[in-house]
Image 1 (cartoon, rainbow, N blue to C red):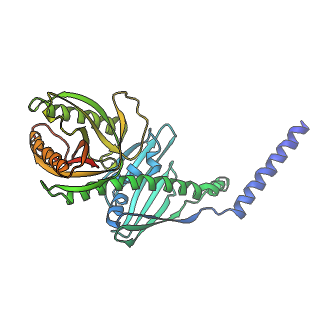
Image 2 (cartoon, rainbow, N blue to C red):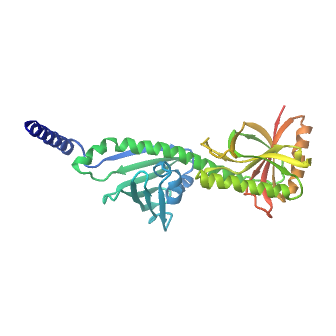
Image 3 (cartoon, rainbow, N blue to C red):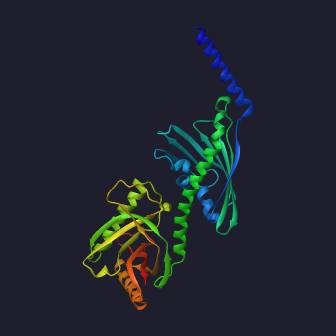
Length: 346
């Protein structure tokens, strides 16, 4: 009995010492600042922060869990925007609001976690460093914690910083794909032959053999594109601004064959686990390309392909695959808008 009394006294003393140390030496809340720079213009960056549907697609707080369920409330963009979330697997829930917006300059978020009546307040500031670079500053004010929970303040800043580091990687990937698409659309000059240097790409797609009869090939392409798009967006959970334009790779001069073999895929920023054996990754190596942008019916692309081949032969260049990049998604019964690229080398 005496042993239990001594143990109880020791426990009371330890709890008291812990409570006293937390009360006198650890702040009830925490304020800190984190700064990052990103190589994209402020208008592109700000649009990813003030639209909560965009925000949750790259912010690691939301993307790190496969079981999180998010509801969005109007207005989806700017001051007054709000979401609620539930993550049953990790036993968390909460609400997030945009309380203030100064367009292209600053935002204030409030995050209520796990029914806590006191929010985490995050002020985010955006500063133009150059036409293509933006500085982002997070000023974080955490809610007051009880004496017994103040120990959490020891790792709050590190946890927040780790989340931002992972989120910035995601944001760069999202903006990279979005800006590439915007730039590509703005720079199109149809039916003009150009020379381009292409960087490497990682593509997830499928290998196909199809009939080259009139319209049958294009219908086959549309069908397989839908399979790939649905797999990437539904099974892998990717959003449209997380991947690039679809690319079809085939032999340059097989348009004369009765049957055509091709690889059709969608560019992704990194390799991820794929459980469906119908899909596989393919890497496009850096290359110099002869390029023509073409718009019209799919069969009409043949003339553009012939122009590229004739140019290569005239310049005494050897050539490899032809790549058909669909600037607009292929849809049955509609004209195509594409970039035709012939890889060439000495």
